[in-house]
Image (cartoon, rainbow, N blue to C red; front, side):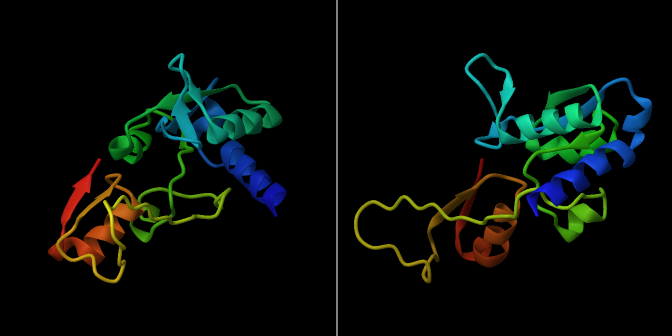
Length: 157
C-alpha cells in the first residue's frame, strides 16, 4: 500500500504541474511540524517529509529544492508560483480541494488531543468555558471553532 502511494505521489510530481519545464522542482513545506518537517539545529529543513520528498525526486531523476513557508500562506504561495508543490502534512479538505489538487495522502490523517490540566480529572464532554488552543489554519483549529467556539476562548498559535 505504501509503495503504491509513494509511486502515485512520484507520478504526480513528474506529471502534475509546471515542474516539468523547470530546472529545479521547488517543494513548499512549513518547517515547524516535527517530526514531519522542521528546522534542525543548523537551521536546515529536516524531517520525514523532507527525506521522502528528496528521495522521490532522486527516484524520478529530478533536481528538487525544499522551500520553507509560513503555514498560513502556504497555499497562496503555491498559487502565486513561489514553488511547484506542497509537502507539509496537509489534510485534504473540501475547501482546500476547491483551490489546489491533491495526490493520495502518503500517511493517513491521525487526529490527536493533548491536554494539560492542573490537578483533578478532565472531562472531554464538558469543555464549556475553557481555553482551548490549536495551531491556526489547521483542521484541528476548524474543528475546535465549529464545535466549541461559542463557549470557549480559542487560542491559535
